[in-house]
Every structure is written in C-alpha cells, then in structure tokens.
Length: 295
View 1 (cartoon, rainbow, N blue to C red):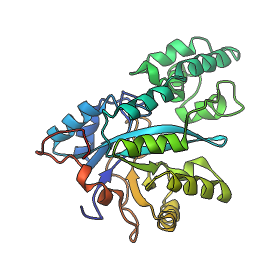
View 2: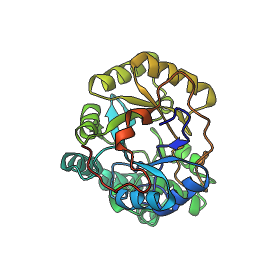
View 3: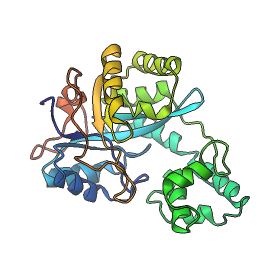
C-alpha cells in the first residue's frame, strides 16, 4: 500500500468510551476521506464484527484494532493492537482480565466525589456507558459536565480525576509484556499509542521503547490527535531509532469532545515506514471475503 495513504488507525465507539456506533464511525471516516480505518476500543473487541461489516458497506479498507491499558512503572500507557484475529481465545481472555477491575474502581471514584459533595456520580456515569464493563473516567467527566459541575471534560480531569484529586483512583492494568504478547499471538502488530501523552523523561521513555521492542512490539503512533505538530518529527526519529513502523490515528471519541476529526491529520513524516506496509496481508479490503482469522 502507498506510503501516503489516508489511514486512521485509532478511534473509539460506544463499545468503550466513544459516543458513536461502529456504523456511524465508519460512515464518518469515509465521508472525511479516510481510506484505511481501524476501530480500537479500550480493552474490548466486541464491536469489531459490526465495524468490519460497516467498513465493507462504506467501501473502506479495514483493520481489526484494540487499545490495551497497561501499567508501566507508575504510569498507565496504552498499546494499540492492529490486524489480529479478534476471536483469538488468549487475546479475549487477557482483555477480560484487564476489564475486570473497572467496576470497583468506578465505585471508589464515585465515593471520592461524594466526599466533596458530588453525589450520584456512579449512576450518572453509567448513563453514558454503552458497555458497563468499560466504565471509565471519561464517563464520569460527561456526567460532571451534564450536571454543570464543570464546563468541559478537560476541566473535570484537572479538578477531579487526576492524581491528587478527589475522584482519582489508580488501577493496575495489564503488564506491557502480556499486552504485546496477546496481540502478537493473535496474529497482530502491537503499537505504542500517543507516547508524548505520558510525559515520560528521557530514561523512562527509552525504557518503555526498549522493553516494548524486546517483547515483540513493532510500531509507534507518530501522527495522532494527542500529539502537537512538533512532536511528529520527534517520534518519527524514535521510530527509526528503534526500528519501529509509524502509525497514524486521530483518537476520535465524540463529535463534541474530540479535538481532531477523521481526515484532519497531516501525512506521516517522510522517511519513516508506515505501519500499514507491515499489515498488507491482514487488511480486509472492500469486496473481499470478510474473515477474522490471520493465516
């Protein structure tokens, strides 16, 4: 596939913390000029059957995707998986274990908010959850905006949902090694999502990239809605330094919340190999037989 493909390989549906269905996302992506699309819900692959069918209906090339929550040191990082068999038993079992602690964490978040006078937050957040197993801080943020505690989700996070604030509860997610191996064993390619967002120092970032590569990871998001333009070149250089493929995705969640929409990202910087070149045999093309197994 060409280097300059309009690929968007990171977004979320109502199966995790997005507000649009897989069908609506596929239509939005196609209308905005996307040529290759992946749905990457958090720790969940249940939307991929519908997403692959919707992509075919829209004439979009499609890759299976997921975004796995990982604890690395004291930081939560995200690993995107692309091009895997989404019915693989090992992958599904690992994702189910990762999802398992979310409900208890959510109840503890609500208890913390209640201590500062914000009642009913758990029930309020549930109103925004398409999949109760994946209740998250984003759903609490939507509730606090709806009830006018804050003006927007960014203000909610600053004042209530980050470390040291009343609604913050840490959670131990999957190990980096496990997340990468679930993806690889299911026939996919693992990608570090939006690395600039973790605010790691140089040594911590080198440790993340080195460990990820040692465990079998092969890609990193270079152009993403979570990066500033000057960071594209930084992570293109890191991709080349570690021998990784470059990925691209807007991290779209909702028309009213996401700062970057489908089709709005610039191309990958020149001189860095795009991830879709390594995934050509795993892409579901319009008109081809729809299957989930990777051979």
